[in-house]
Length: 411
Image 1 (cartoon, helix red, strand yellow):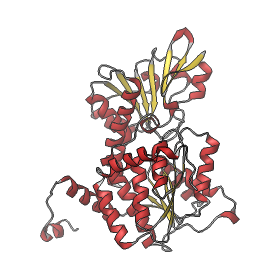
Image 2 (tube, one colour):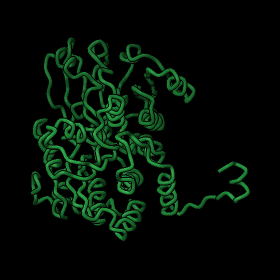
Image 3 (cartoon, helix red, strand yellow):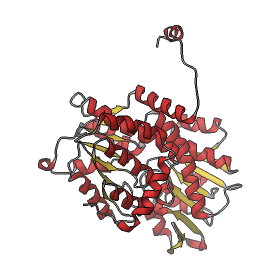
Image 4 (spheres, helix red, strand yellow):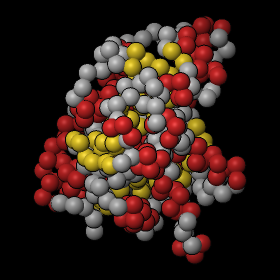
């Protein structure tokens, strides 16, 4: 039985799911293929992804292809209760509610696993980590799973090196149709949409400090500049730092940037990117937001220890009052701002990412028993398939190599 906040919200949730469906043509087409083949007939699939409309549509695609689907969120603040109710009303077992405690969040992960799924879809790695912590006599054979975040892949590769990865995992994050578009264009737009809706302040003319110049950071910096901001990038990777500089951004250390920024946005996947010594020199009314998966990039314990008081100044904004009366504004409790304070990536972007997820699961079934307990990047031909379907849906035609050209390039 589903565990959700309010079943009466189902109608609104179903409306949201129907809306995004119109903007996810690639996933719809791939879903039709999977449904015709009954790819997941008799299979159980456990999902831990942000519980919002695009995710719900993916769950329904898998269900229509024959799977029994069990879904929960991967972040307590990104769960939308109406979507959870709508998805549950459509036959998916849902264990998710907005704003749950850390303990209840972990219980929901365990609820999904109690159904002993054959395949998993993870976002950040919490579902797999929960499986690994089960007693040995409580575990079962899992065919494999898919992971779509940079943070999750880091955790998986750590287990792979330690030879503690319990089953094969498909690296969706490093597929071109994921990190080129989801990480850069999706994160860039959805992060700023959430920040602007939450703060209702002007971006033009402000100084924006972006921590991390991976694909997510690139998207955030690009959109900030497009809105008229002066953008500073901080990095630990010298190659990425040079790239940011050659792309026209100022590059410096966080110590140097801290007194200058009006907005600080972290996108590194690492902890303690902004700490006490940075808070102590920031401007009054600076905004701090995080676009990394976990709420560890902005050290809120440090900030709380420096603050005389804190209070909710506006929905999803906590103000911390420091010595001298300066206030620092933290968005969405330092959690993933585009989902904890927004609606996530545009549907057209998640169309590609979730198409890759579905094809990744199909690939794992096809190669069941052949794969080692390692992290595998999604095969290129599946990446190309999603891109071809997406281009067709966009009404865009491209050239194709002749056989003579292909021979010349040794393809």
